[in-house]
Amino acid sequence: MSVLPSHLELVQGIVLPKPVGADPVLDFLNTRSGFDGRGPAVDEWLTSYEAFVIWNGYVGLLSDASVFRLIEQASLKPTDATRRLDAVREFRVDLYDVLTDEAASGSFEAVARAVDRALARRHLSAVPADGLGVRASWELPEDLGLPLDQLALLASELLTGASRDHIRLCPGDNCGWLFMDPRGRRRWCSMATCGNRAKVRAYAARSR
Image (cartoon, rainbow, N blue to C red; front, top):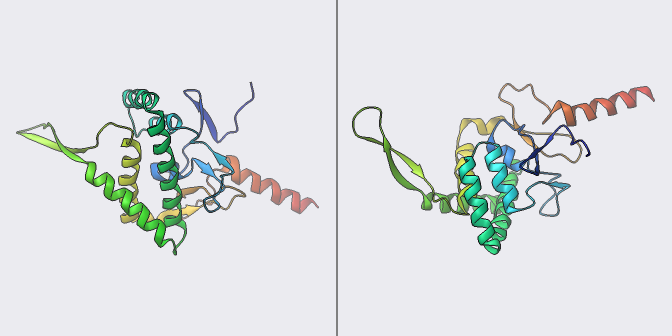
C-alpha cells in the first residue's frame, strides 16, 4: 500500500486534503488544487457527493449521524446527488473567484444567489434554555442541499467579517490554496508541502 503525501489523509476510505486554511470555507476551497478558470483541476478531491459529505464530517460541519443519513439519501437519489455535486463545484469556483479576483462580478452574483437560497431555507427552532423559557437557533433541512447551504452561509459570514482581510494565497507551484494569516507571518499553505518544495528549489539553485 502506497503512503499518502503529508497533506492528504484517508477518511472513511476517501482521500481528502488535511485542513490547513484555518477556516472551514477556505478548507472547502482547498478541496482542489491548481485553480485555472473553470477547467479541470490539477487535483480534485470532491470526486463524488459521498466524498463531499464525508469531507463535511471530517472538518466538523456535519455530525457522524448526519453524514450517514445524507449518504443514504444520496444512494436513493443518485441523479439528484450528482446534480448537487455539480452545484457544489460551481459554487467553489465562484467563491474562489470572489476571494481572489476583484473583477469577478459575475461570480459574486452567483455566490450571492447561493447565500439567498440558503437563507430562504432556514427556519427558527426552539431549544431549551438554561433559565426561563426557550432559546432559538437557525436550522436547515437535513436533505441533500444541507452541506452546500451551510457553506454558503459560512461564506457570507467570511465575506462580511473582519477576517476577510486576513486571507492569503499560497504561491506554491500548481497550488492556489487559501489560508488565514491574521499575524501577517505565514507564507505557505503548509511548510510540509509547498514550503519544503520551495526550500529544495532554492537550495538547488544556490548549488548550481
